[in-house]
Length: 363
View 1 (tube, helix red, strand yellow):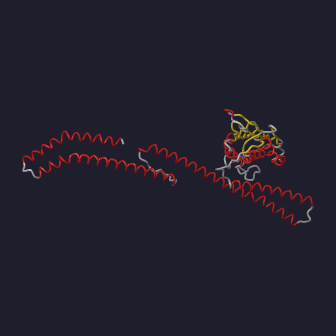
View 2 (cartoon, helix red, strand yellow; view 1 turned 60 degrees about the horizontal axis):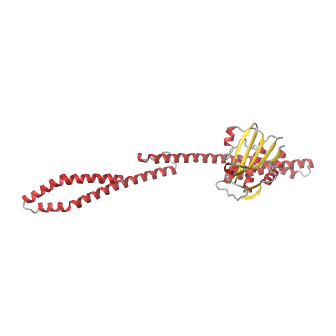
View 3 (cartoon, rainbow, N blue to C red; view 1 turned 90 degrees about the horizontal axis):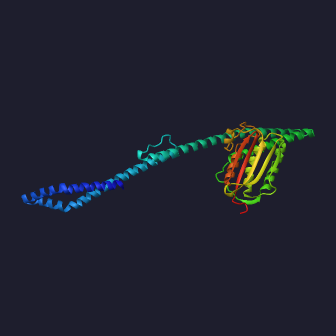
């Protein structure tokens, strides 16, 4: 628009100059030609010029506007072509970015930032996929070990019907232990292959949070007892909360499983629960699981909720896991609008789960 206004102003100045300087001289010249000659062609030329003077000026102005607009449209189309090529380069993941004209420097910077972000996301996805494939290979290797033991002991029991009862009981116990280990490895395998937390449906209902925590603790009693641990509940006898009980159970299960796996034998694993008020009287359901064992370093705490991250990288470690439990716990807590935090000091590690309850749990 500004360009058209400048062109119009320039044309008006040129037209005024022509009308004031050139036109009078041309008119006098043609007039004397007509008067001095025998008329004819000179008169017709003079008559045509005086008649078509304004239409010709208007036509020249329209032609100028057309050429100016056409130039602008062509320039705009060239910008679109350059932008299309640049965007296509990002989608095609080309190493070299398509050059853009200087007028589109800000757009070029924005596209460059998008390209860098996409490359970072691609690298992260590739690393996660490589880690996933690595863990699948590890699990495939580890699954073979207990399976071989199970087959071996069952074959021994079948081939030796006269085994003493004590030996038979011992072999049966070992077989059962290996079967449990195989079940754990298969659970980890399916957890890896089906891991997808892009959309977690939440169906909230009211229930007793104190009873809920006690029931979760009861489920871990055999595992804790086998490791010489004591599970302790600290909290009210009744606590009305509003959440998706199944999803919160998954969060607490993963956290408690981690605590029981890493706590030092002979120590307590404590589960605390309460309602806490935040800013503006907002109420949160708080669940804290604390164990005593090896203190976690700040570097480990920063990565503890990453997918496929494990503190113990030994492939056959009983407590190693697939490195998905805490990642799943955080994603599930966040699907509720809450979160999960970790702190470790002087050998005590605490995971705190926050589930929003709103301004009032009785509302």
